[in-house]
Image 1: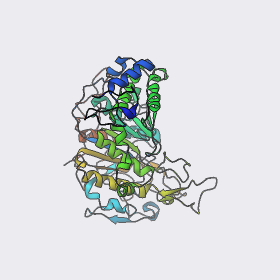
Image 2: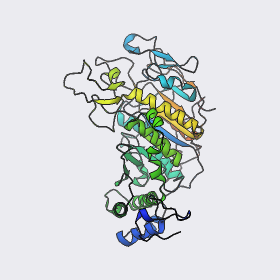
Image 3: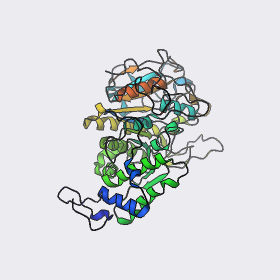
Image 4: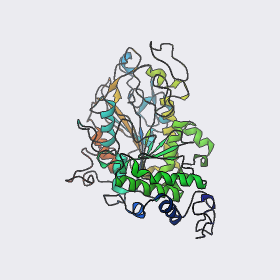
Length: 477
């Protein structure tokens, strides 16, 4: 390798391929010299792996679209046209490209792609609370009274299998690794997700309590600042030595490999494709998830919900929790509804609401993965923590309802075009065998090539299988 005249001048560092300059790469030895020499980071901190379980061979990745707040099954994939008006709502079902399967008319793009997915209509949760419901859904275990104990799927997979590719973390959260949850739980800070907050075009990367602003390392000062951040990890109150060690090592990989920077460069994608995903924060998160998986990430959780309406003026932390004005909120936040409740303020957002944004981004993701030959090795899951009440309330909304809901899954040997189970005429409860979060968990692990019954949680005093449910009948080919 050609030596750079500047130890940490990223713009001048060369790579082994004929001395070609790469603005994203520096030599690992040079980075270690910078870290040890200037900031007191010890070499063992970068060389000791904080993994407690053997790495496996699972090759399938997962994109988990968490519809935080709880989507209505009536207004997504389980319409009830024969129910009374106060139950069926304002919208009609529409035919899909799977004969005999109907979904909400406000999902026209997904209606033409139902032959790529399976829908579990007899899903049933246990909790109507955002926190316990989300923790149950994200881990497959109902949380005990003291709070969530078992980790979210992505954190567990990260701990069991580690990174597929050097410089590409195993687990990401966009913008966080599942709202209302404690993702790493008993595993501790060392196995938190790499959260990518804000707009994907101008992101902030968080590794535990450390921030890597925008992953911009084009100059010497930027690199020094990032390495300085690494040296301060030991001062973070909730960082154990293990977390310090692991995050330091992974952050160094980010700094030196260039894989992460490349994956996050959405400008490499054709404008037409970006617009199909939705040329906004929410659509671009789904595109970024595909690029992260393509670059080697194992698990990406997207909190896919648009912010606006009654729920605040933020731009990154939306919700499907439509207790009021559901039929307005699901479609658009651009105009204030005429029947706005007294005491409420309407927060405007000019882009599409949750339903059209979900329809655009999910349908494009499925096409994109299929066209790239990635769908067979990428599991796609879309679900919330519960469904919504059968009866539309006096505020033109629906309330929390764990007794019925639906889950969409695709890719990774999921049966294409399958509809599994059913709810009764009014959507109040499963009329066939119910499937709960435990069964979804077992099925997710199975799709990822992990035996849910013979794989055990790391660091527990006695062997504990990672799933307590059954693989869903008819879900896989």
